[in-house]
Length: 556
Ligand code: PEP
Ligand code: MG
Image 1 (cartoon, rainbow, N blue to C red):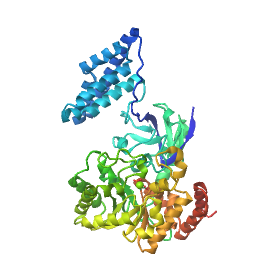
Image 2 (cartoon, helix red, strand yellow):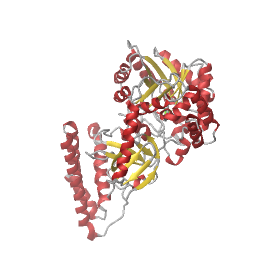
Image 3 (cartoon, rainbow, N blue to C red):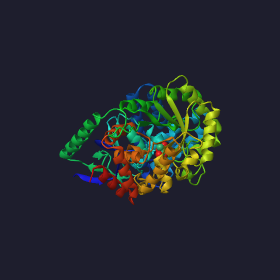
Image 4 (cartoon, protein in one colour):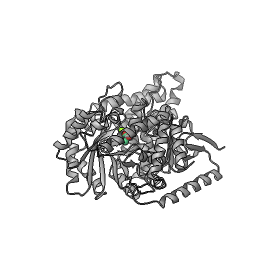
């Protein structure tokens, strides 16, 4: 029977497919003891689970081929290691359940490996993965990590961290549904980057049965469980119609009366460039360089590796503008070698620019790599720092850029309310501002961007957030400098008109949103956008602000 659930739509489009759950970390099985008579049955269960996991790893290895096949086959052998199996059997005989015996036997073996030299210690993660797979199978819970599937699916998860999503095969993910997260969570950002529909903050998403067919409408936030054929056809037709209308929009971003608002792309690295070019991005408004650092959380990428990645992005926009954000580590993007492990509240701790000022060598390498990457290219390079709190921060960043000999404009992100309140003072040190409305909302409303329960407060239509945007844009105008938006607020077509009306000078977003924003902006004049902005700021809630702006723009 068809049922409908409602979450928060964060990435446009419709996805129809089977549910696959992102497996969560395997919990430690309880240490309960079994009667002696059950030992044989438990031994049988453990052997069956081990064989099934080994067969599955071998099959996936065959499919993958190459280096991956060798790794997966080695894991299959680990699973069936005779000594390990004998240890599991012994533990069951003295009263362990099959899952507990596997868990403990692998823990003992893990300790041995970890202490046995660098090469074997490097296999610990593989061993943990094998253990998790066997225990998950015995407990009857989904396999941990990204689902193993050769068919396209809708990924359902509690929330998605950047590290999880690095392993996703984009050709298999039709869309995302998450239980947690708000419009600015990484799940939402990633979905927009991949151009797949997504719904977040859906309570009970975890209870959608594996394999159930669902239709995800990323515009309305509706999820249709077991949709009828008629519903599927209706959703697909509406999505196709919208796509065709968008394909007709092209060219630089501007209002109906020709007020230019460059539409730029948010990228995480060279892999995102083709989509940005296809969407007609006029440049890059936010290059989130931290994605280059996530591959190895123990070391920074070498200067050479950074030069190559930066150059690939810069070369893609000859004569265009590319705004590179220096490493934004910490809080929801921790890096082992930089982020303190013991912070009671990481979002309020050492993150963003604070981390870099504590590790000047990391900032220096990054700025030097950028200077080398831009050498000889006609691109307009702009470099900005995340999480600038005050003028002192801005000066420290500008000094570091100058010391590295960087030929670029230096800017500050406005993500902390203090930076918006004192924007003019910050602009004495830097040449542009870029509003990171995701974090600005988080810090203005004391609402963690990863927590679904407070997603109401993460809504960028909140009039208090619009006030801070207006303050920043007015300060930049008074100083004759620019003030863009690169937070997710820019990807909402209606809000993009309001931001333009507030005086924002460029909009940067996930590439998939660019056509939607371009088409909507082109429908209204600057004066209409200004009136809509005034109406939204006069409201008392996000919903009222949205309706007020909509009413002005549709001439009601
Ligand atoms: C923001 O906070 O709005 C922003 C653009 O940065 P990130 O989402 O990467 O924290
Ligand atoms: Mg941010």
